[in-house]
Amino acid sequence: MPVITTIEDLRRIYARRAPRMFYDYCESGSWTEQTFRDNVSDFAGIRLRQRVAVDMEGRSTASTMIGQDVAMPVALAPVGLTGMQSADGEIKAARAAEKFGVPFTLSTMSICSIEDVAAHTTKPFWFQLYVMRDEDFVARILQRAKDARCSALVLTLDLQILGQRHKDLKNGLSAPPKPTLRTMANLATKWGWGLEMLGTKRRFFGNIVGHAKGVSDASSLTDWTAEQFDPSLDWDKVRRLKEQWGGKLILKGILDEEDARRAADVGADAIVVSNHGGRQLDGALSSIRALPGIVRAVGDQVEVHFDGGIRSGQDVLKALALGAKGTYIGRAFVYGLGAMGEAGVTRALEVIHKELDTTMALCGRKSVAALDRDILLVPEDFEGRWA
Ligand code: GLV
Image (cartoon, rainbow, N blue to C red; front, side, top):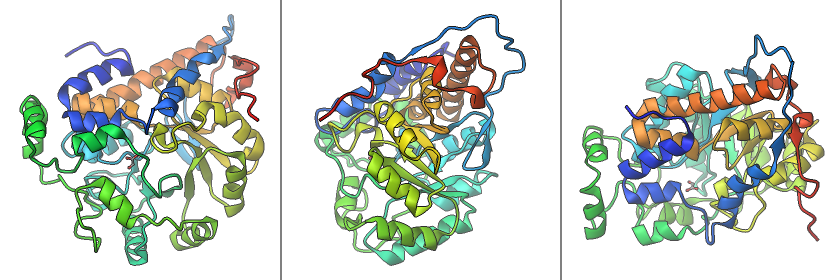
């Protein structure tokens, strides 16, 4: 068993183990990948204030997100095709999250279906929805999420058309992979992954296949989004979906203060500051630079969550200190999953928890609630002066 001390350790193992097509899917941003890179690198601009001689006994990272108890305010983000990174990946990730005491969010574009994940877990998870043109499909999938006792709907607002990730086109990304020469040559070197995949029936978009009509190629994310995602989604529709769902609602993909105000007006329980991991509008601001302005704009009206670029517990702490009430990890847990299955997701959560807890202590704080801007050294021009 290798000694794993960082999320980067998990990424390296994952890179060796997973088929190229799925590694690239995870590890890409759109177009030039500027926003994808900035999401990570902008965290480094923020420094921490070292404090001493503060009693650090009895610390806790426990908190709440949308009123639910969490062992630390770090949810697993919705990630498409997670069940292609490791066989039955969504079930493995959901189980690791449940045992750790953090929320798991199931993507619409998952391999394991809502029902499958519900059958293999004991606590309610969150369900992420992409709004489709087919209103019957939307109504049915919301009902399926309710029947599965999902305790929040995470509505993604920043992906009604798919940002272009060059590698996905070049690799011919699909679930399951199509047997081209190039793909087969790569799969032949990934026998550990392949053996596990042969042992499961879950190799298709489980929420879609058999549930949706009029899809020309149900294995292609690109075709599916182009044909099915509803480009007319607007704030009125968001309001209607809120009524239709009737439970806790989290609006994901907010990067602009004006949009944050609109989202708060809708009456969402939380918003997620996110640029979809740099996978949609390349050239958009990194999430961490966008966060302070959004907290100032709506932080007293709605719970502000943060997503984008988190690779350590120190990143979590910085986002919390800038006013986020909760955070999400996407790639950081996928690295763990692709490297070591459920144990790898648990390891990713442990690494982040330890970094968060230790950093909190060395900054002189004993609880998540006590984290504030005062523990940070933020460059004066951090948010940027844009005309
Ligand atoms: C969403 O499904 C994505 O690929 O970013």
